[in-house]
Length: 231
Image (cartoon, rainbow, N blue to C red; front, side, top):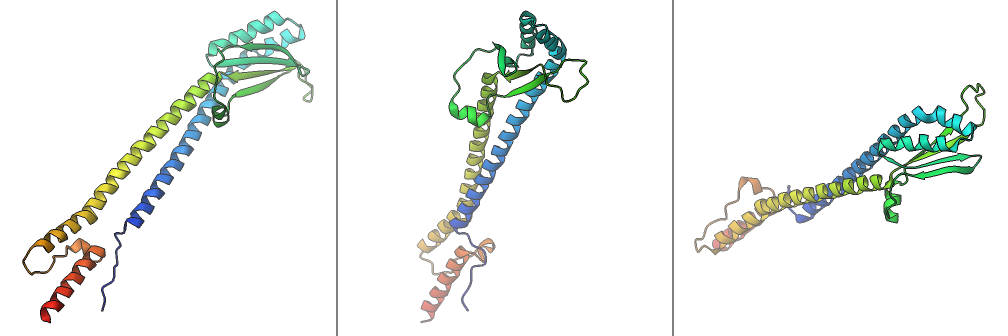
């Protein structure tokens, strides 16, 4: 009865495992990056939302009285949040005021799409005291987060994720090399050394390799040697 391999040591299965592991790590880190970026953008928007609450009423009153200097002063006060990039006030579709609070720097097109830039929010400005829920707002206030800040965070986080991925790849590659050396290279080297001996003896088969390719190779060699000796 021919011996059969019960446990394979083929490199194909190890390579498949290696590829699946790396793909899973890449997917996990990609999801983690997306979550961290969305969380940071939501934090920025929450900060802007909290700042808008303080000026929403006086800003609406200033628009009603057409006091643009007061409108500008109120918008400039939002700069203290440190994340403001741009503030735009529109009335009936026309831009009343457009203020830039951050120095414009070139951002690659791929980063704009990749990071979802610009990060902005639009707040309707209603006249306070109006009880009609369907009333038309006096205007709209659009606030944008500093795009450079979002871009730097996205690039730094992406660099951290890539570094982590490469480090994990290195660790897995070292582990795979160690496994291949211990499971395949060392037993084959031991068999090769035994075959070089002039002593006519069987090749010892370790218990760990009883049911894999190396064990099958040693058993077949021992069987052929005994058959030749018997002849």
